[in-house]
Length: 516
Image (cartoon, rainbow, N blue to C red; front, top):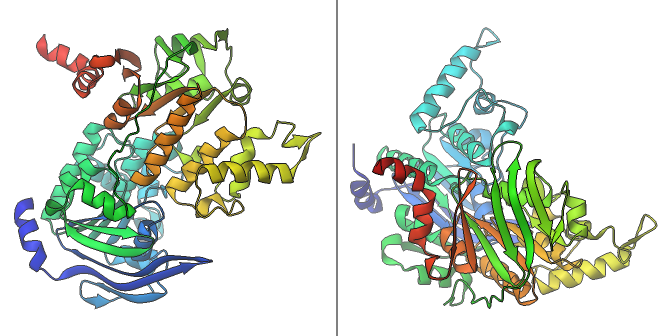
């Protein structure tokens, strides 16, 4: 078996496994791809890098057979491919794992794995054989995943594992991974990286979409930069700096990733005492956030940090403890009541919880203001006022293109986030709960989200940021809570707010056990 290093040295001289030339794709009023070239070699991990809306998703959909290209040539393993469908792509060994999951929620993991490729004999499904094969694959991948569980009972991290397992069930020659670590813990991410090394050693080609520089540094052989649907450059990952990649991606220099936020802590806006949730994901938590500052919550996936802010907003059942908003006890929190108290929540999963993708941007942005007399009166929507309110919000957030009648599902990840943020500008709010605000969005869009948070803090709001991205939550927050196994492990501020102290808090129970 070749080592990863040997493959990386041999790959440049090898014939491409995948070769695209002059690929173009148009949608109504939009040229998503403009004569894009791309080649991927066997045993190579090739990163697609670009802003949201640069054409990455369209390109991987073309490669996966979801969209036919309007122009250009497509060769796979030396053979010209025409009229590619998802079924044919899978048959020749092209297997995608999309950022938006394709699992059927009401089916089990194993049923999803074999959907459309069931094992049968004489017209009778061989359930035992499928269960055995599913268990063997999951064990080989090292995932903590029960093949008999229904998908809608799984966490997002476990759904991500199921998607990866589904992609690897058959014979894979080209694996496409779109932001695969967004929902995984450090341990699960480590297992994925081990799997990638194994696949590369077996000669599998990989296309990897990520905005995380650390992942690109750890995994990439080459990087192709897309901007505005065009191929900008393809570079050797070992010979390009982070700054050069970002400049190629955005078309401008970005010297500072995180803005300087002038925190001015004032009165306590959110006060949580002894909070415990029904499912045990949060246990006896004491927490507070002040107006005029960003309060961060860090922790590994599954530590309870997302559940904590969801409970404050009223999305998780509370069995014990007290929540106070601006000093007033808040019994039985619920989303509608939270909005009336000036509390806004921005979920991590924009597709499942954040947006109605088939509905216009206008409706998505105004849905939190429908109880306001300026927008609706006597049960009737004042459409002119609604359009004016949403239009102004989207202009302030620099939504591009600014057409508020487009369906939200037609937008890139960064623009979808802007639509959710626009809700904060449609009514008077003072507390903002951000759950993984930068997941799936590019560097340029992240900067705009961070700038928005800065403006909120400067206006005297209390901002709470939950993030699995440690550099992000460290840079943005004035005070930082670290959660571990549903409890607050540490509260850090000032010089104590360091990556080393956060990591020590993540693993303190493990370290204490080792020391004993």
